[in-house]
Image (cartoon, rainbow, N blue to C red):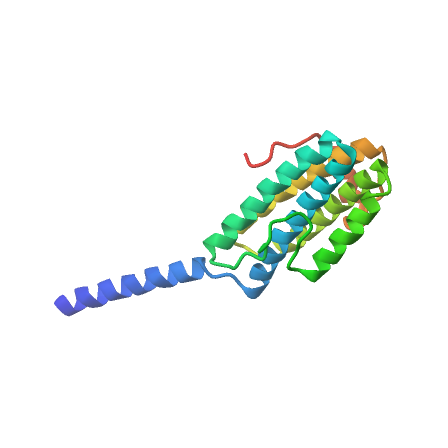
Length: 193
């Protein structure tokens, strides 16, 4: 009987540790998505801060604050899964990912042209974010990742609506026309509820 109880306790302990390991495990794709998303949210924040400094328009300040919250949400997941944060320098305009560094340089150069161009850049960024988050959702079934992705997508849709409202018109680049029409014809959403 003692042997049975001991084997039972060992078996339960093993199963519990396996469940914990599986729950805390991320695929390489999930890791790559989170690491990229952390800096992509920083890209949005930094471009909006740059545009706010140029044009002093409250839309850029408000949305850059929201992007900081998005960065924090992704950082929470990085910490939870013990991933190294790619944001080694939180200064505006500094990125570890060379593609995002190049994109930041391009987008700020366009934003320099005019307020209208800066608003268009904002819509472009949110268009890209919505598309990328949709792809990241397809790469996971983890509830915690999906919850953060859902909150980020909701925020991006709201930001997108705000930029397009300022512009008056916009042609989507990354999402399809049907998705664009659905977003623009919908009211601002309550995210994270």
